[in-house]
Amino acid sequence: MTWYKEFYAGESIAGKKDRVKWKIRHRVGQIDIYVITLSSHPGNLLDIIPSWELMQKYYPKSELFVVGVDKGYENAMELAGAIVMDVYRETGDFKVRDYFLEKQKTSPEKGSRWKSCF
Image (cartoon, rainbow, N blue to C red; front, side):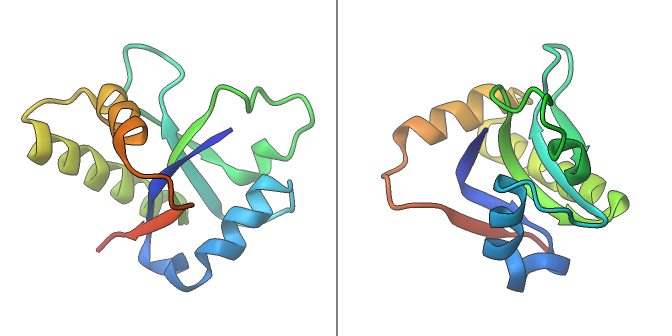
């Protein structure tokens, strides 16, 4: 599982983002937390996955590229929409995967920074 360096986090977890990330990475149960990843299907932009799914031992986590996290499915959908709109504002296109992979390559390595949304 790869985490985007300039991570999006919803308001509801802005103060707990490092703790939430740690729990997701260490498969600790969290109720109502959703991760937003680049889509596993080429025809889609983003996937919204409940964190409890990531706890499963055989869940295919190696291919995931996490770009956001939020509490509650509706909040996660709003955050995903905000992410797509940010990409569109920056590029004038909806090539979300290309945008994040390029930004990940070109941004300096300073550990994970979280981008709070809203």
